[in-house]
Amino acid sequence: MTSQVNYYNQFGNLYRQSILDCPEPQYWTTDYDVKGRVYREMKERIDLQEKLVKEYFTKEQTVLDIGCGFGRQAFSLVSKGYKVKGTDTSDVFIEIAQQLFSRNGYEGDFTCMDILRENLNGYFNQLLLLDVLEHIKPQQRRGLFEKLNKIGGGITLIVSLPHVKKRISSQLNNRIRKRMTRHLPFFVNREEHPYPIPEKNNMLKLSKGLFSLYKFIETSQTDYYVFRQ
Image (tube, rainbow, N blue to C red; front, side, top):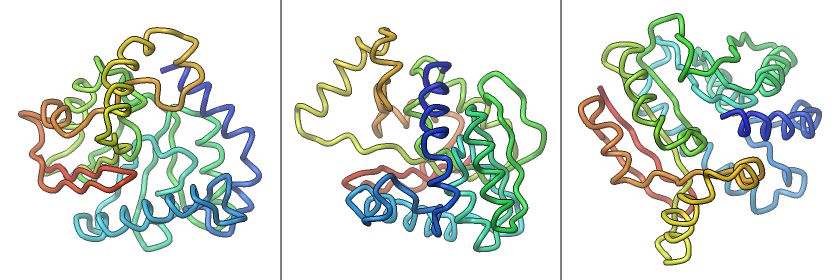
């Protein structure tokens, strides 16, 4: 995961000020100022994530945002009265999240850690894993689900993943090309999604015996899963 951390540390350093100055950091994108295509897609994703959280989470319990990035979802949720703890492997993103919350007068609890290798203090039953799993090596994903299963009791887990389109070129790229190039540093160090993105059948295998799939939503850009322990 080191190469992925480096990728996002560089990204965070490049756009830190732009993120901090954004009037709607939950919707920040590189084309936020012109409200371009990436912004519109991000807004759609964040709004749907908020609806899922409202439907399945409660404000009485802390939400654990795993792979919180610069605090995008955490900012969105805390502004609506949720308590959030965020973790990420990027120390740059954690610094930005802390600065973002401080600037806006919110209390934030952010920790730089690799949840695959470190133990998290606390008991949580509301977990977010948004656009994270695709950055983890395929052989480590089942281990992550096993670890999440032990974080609390009666857990509800909301997962989002980039949608893999049904067209043949997208399927070949995800299932075949990435299976080969994920072993090559040239691709891993330069691609945002260097590893194969798990699809629904993969997710059912990863969660088998640990979580039950309660709801599945497929959109043109993102797939959403609501799991229950």
